[in-house]
Length: 293
Image (tube, rainbow, N blue to C red):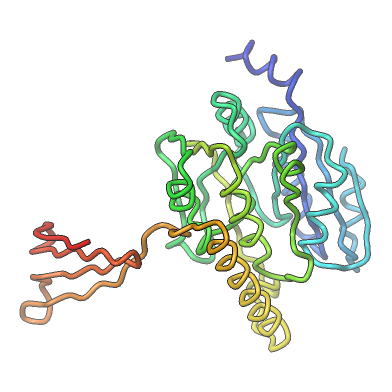
């Protein structure tokens, strides 16, 4: 492994793009995590999107490429990172999040092994634990339907769980819609997943998505709620139109609703599970007994 890793270090540069806005309490930990990676041929690009705190000053303490711009939102910050990136591969990480210390080693090794346009990590979702996805097997997805189901793009279209081949993004002119202050990653991801030649899942690579109070995603202020709602509506509309234009029938992993018939109000005797694909499964005491397509 040592010789193999040394060879990779010499040949394959990964650009790590970090959009930042008033993240001074978190940025040092994020940068320390990246600089402590077992794979260290990294170009770290910090895009300061008009911060009013000392985010930029903290970034300057580290060996990073710092870009400073007027506040335009995370989509514009990520676009700025794409434009200046010089690596062969690219990863987006939010300044308040973390990755495990062999994240890039595992992701790069996997994407190189099959010459894929994208590699996908597992992740821990601090705010919504039900969304946590831990990958235990390495799979390769080539078929459009399988890529869409695996990526679960309509419900979990996060860009930070992927390592991208940079030439693939540029050849397909994949950029973020700067009109979307929230949910821009979903519109980006549906295109990337669709156009990719293949996607490989990477066990052992873990992204830790943390919750930060008063962020655009979590804030309860009326103004930020309205921004979220408008952006999500626009992003959802884009995804639906894109799916229609490219004849994509499935955007996400099958989701279902459950109806249970209880004995004594406690013991589920018969369970009916209806998937969004139209398939219906019936269970007797938890055991499958019948299904209808």
